[in-house]
Image (tube, rainbow, N blue to C red; front, side, top):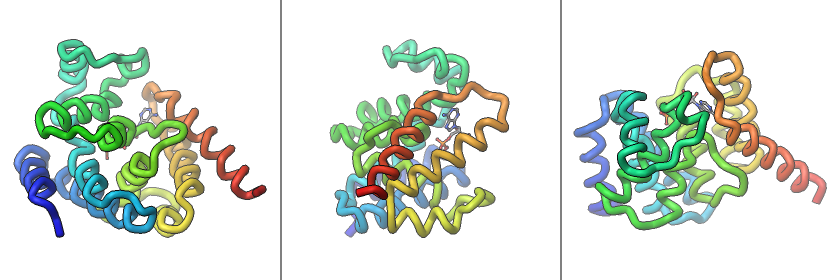
Length: 197
Ligand SMILES: Nc1ncnc2c1ncn2[C@@H]1O[C@H](COP(=O)(O)OP(=O)(O)O)[C@@H](O)[C@H]1O
């Protein structure tokens, strides 16, 4: 059963996000819940993290920079150059301060949903993947294969998503957060190790 908290968060997101982003958000929340069933993660936490993952996206790049400065949220050089990357950190701040989320794993899943990070928790992996594969996503290379893989071999799926994301980002003229490359290297090694064992 969907909790009152999840219901309220969904209503709050419907009232604040644009229609497209709201549909994406609900897609992420329920895809994260389905992955949580497979990987034995708390379903409620997956729904909450999914519902709130983009709640930090309601501002312009300039506003993101000022928001972080005002609320003492640390910004690295890449984030200063490409403030859109800050929406994860800002989202986690809003999730905690406005929506009362206390669970650190949920807050980390929101913080790292765009870049990932090495050695992610199961919930962090699930939200990162759900953001990429949810049903409203279109026109991503190998998406059908990645969707299938996400329910079968989670680290292999992460490796594939990170590789595709890096290829895609290299075609764009923007500052790439090196965390994505680090995360890719980490999961490449991990999958290799799993294959040997
Ligand atoms: N390492 C990175 N460096 C710079 N931009 C990135 C990086 N990873 C993802 N992005 C870009 O950040 C934007 C937001 O991504 P994401 O948070 O996954 O989207 P969503 O709004 O669907 O949650 C996308 O345009 C994506 O291509």
